[in-house]
Amino acid sequence: MNGIEFKAKPGFNRMHTALLIGYWGGIGLLVALICFNLWIGMKPQELFSAVKGIAHWSFSVPLSDTVTKSVMVPFTYFQPINPDMFDAKNAYLVVSLTNTVLAFCAYIYSIGQIRYIIGSILSGNSPFSLANAARLRRLGIVVILYSLLAKLILNILICLFVTRIFSINLGGISLIGIIIGILVLFVSEIFKYGALLQEEHDSTL
Image 1 (cartoon, rainbow, N blue to C red):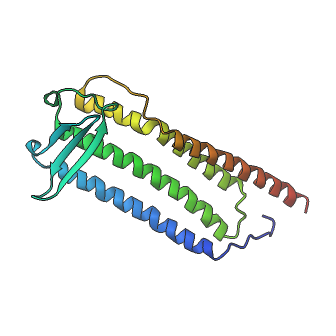
Image 2 (image 1 turned 90 degrees about the vertical axis):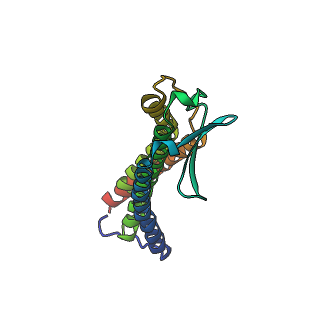
Image 3 (image 1 turned 180 degrees about the vertical axis):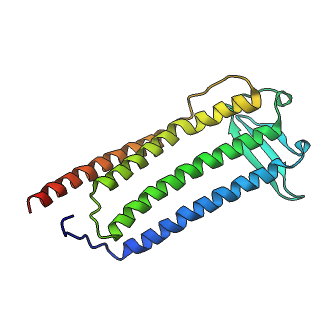
């Protein structure tokens, strides 16, 4: 920036370290959970059970005599059909793996974008840069897409691999997530405007 250096506060180093731990920890946990679910998938089919509750399904598998792993799905994503019409093991694996992969991928990507922003500040750059504005914009888009599509993707995968009954529910949209994503997009525009003002200021020096 034409010799102008932004001095980051000491707290940014701690933030960057925490984000780095969160980023790689998220990747490690994602890999561990995928391996854990694949290990569960090797268990005999008869160990898996599907219990129809008042408004949701509960898919379970015993891990030991005292420990049981369960996942729950509302009827809006998984029809309240007869348990004999689908495989409880497939249902468990599809629900568990889909929720895990989608949530952690969105988390890891989001943490990565914030980490890059903090890293650019620690490098002596102004936070108001076009690169940081683009990172915030991507972050906002990911939050919105996750809020819009996560449950829909789960619904579609259940239809394809479990029930084989086409039934799409669009009620799983997270309005809070969409609002947060839109606010992040607004902030990205502020960063973009600040970067353009900084460039205009630098060009006049």
